[in-house]
Length: 63
Image 1 (cartoon, rainbow, N blue to C red):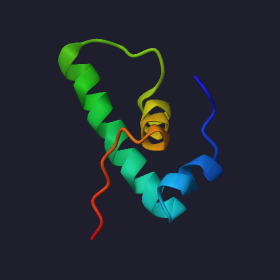
Image 2 (cartoon, rainbow, N blue to C red):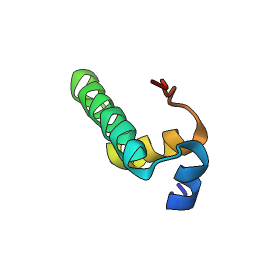
Image 3 (cartoon, rainbow, N blue to C red):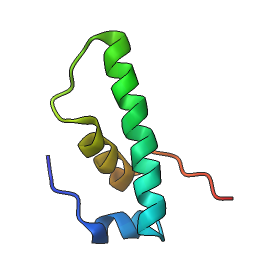
Image 4 (tube, one colour):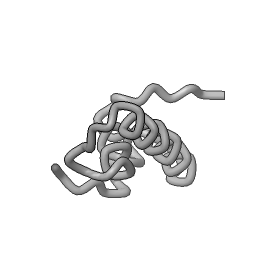
């Protein structure tokens, strides 16, 4: 697991506040999924969500 820096996030999303909202929604989704499947991930959902955002695993809808 690597640390996710603000610079890495800004390469994917233009606005850091928008990135936090996207990551928070993903973290909630991951947390809900963990509860439903009763499987704990190796890392906490917010960390996984930020990593997924930087790696491009989250689709971002532009308005």
